[in-house]
Length: 640
Image (cartoon, rainbow, N blue to C red):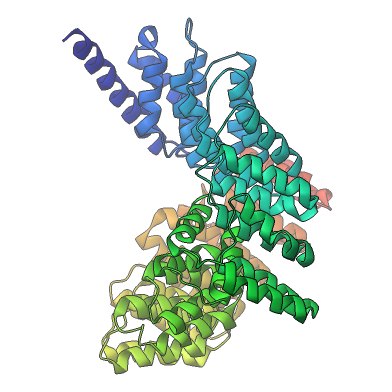
């Protein structure tokens, strides 16, 4: 009961603090960043006397977990309070939020604090830190975290050590990998197939065969959980990649003697290497050995190994092992292929599409929609539009696209890849099947057409939407109005603007800006003013931002007098930034008279504004190549 009564107020206080910080942050000028107002809020809550690492941890996790700036600000604020010091609990929470947001520099700085202050962290903190750094491709930093953990007597789980060993090896930190391997053996840390497999697959490329076999034998004898057949495959594959296929051939029997029995896949790797080098006699010998001594690979073993590699983000290694399986038409589970297609596409899109083709053509199975989404995203990122189209063609041949979700995915990614014609065809194929495309698909195609300078097809899609009864939204109007204005078709863009107002769709800043820019360029100033007045009627905040771009557009097209006249309207008088923009434009264009008249007018109607505008002008011209161009305006004010 005592413990419960103590815990409840602490939990309630953490909730109160967390909510107050989020509330203050949401109303500040820079949301989700630490500010003095938050420190004032914390002081006003009056809990400084009861602050503890546990309370700090409860506030950060869960309230600030996804707001690293707030979490770090609160963490640092707490450290400044009298009599308080962080411990393992509070460090655990801050490292958690920083790792989620991938703030590795901040993590490094805090970890240096931990070392300097000699704070003993819980083993779970070291583990989570190492895992976060590995996911962020910071294997070297993860190694130093492990070194610190071991130097303070902390034990780190062997799975973490093995993942780190694999990462150091894979990322090219061979010296650190060697140090960790030696340290793990000295301390009796268990090696597993993933860690030792990746390490030995690289180590074997440059090592003497007798040294290699001795090392493998020692590790295998002291680590019974290591899969010998997988290790044999990785060694032989590594040797063949290093053009040492004869060494691979000669150690086949020795590997068997140290309980690393080569399976059919291992023999095939060497046989194929001999084909490449033209050693056909040796190839026949290897194939005879395979038939006599080899064993069929167990798909369950390779399934676990490949999925483990993917989980550890060792995607190149996962790809290479899978390619050996697929190229030899050995058994592989569909869920493994599914995982390979989505993950490997991030590092090797061509191989990922190869796995997709194998899955569809050889197993008759189809990828999950989330897998296809990952593959499509990565193909677009790598600018592999041709591969994307081929992948969709393979899937279409198996009737993969049959409902709105899959069609939506295909069309949207075709548009992102700039494959407009294929996307357009897919849309009509979808409609032929009786499926109704939603407005987002039309929008994606219209935007892709506009990017590809295909204005007429974009307009046809607009007409098609109207005929089909598909209701246009803000995005539809936004894309078309912007493009038509850029292309000089301002009458058409103005017509669309008026139509969207009739439909009750509220324009945004982009539409107002695009329209006024196009209309100014086409010297349709009355229409431009009409658009701007509509903006003023609907949203004063947006209108203040649009005004500056409107003034810039007027000046860019030589309409300095009209820009000055616009700013003389009463509602724009206090908008000093717009006046500064005008004066800078007329100064740059040597339209001194317009600028002088405007400055004199400001002095007549609002003398108090003169100082502010002059100060802003000086600041604006300090970095200008011609700062003296402002002097005529200042002199005119002094003389008037």
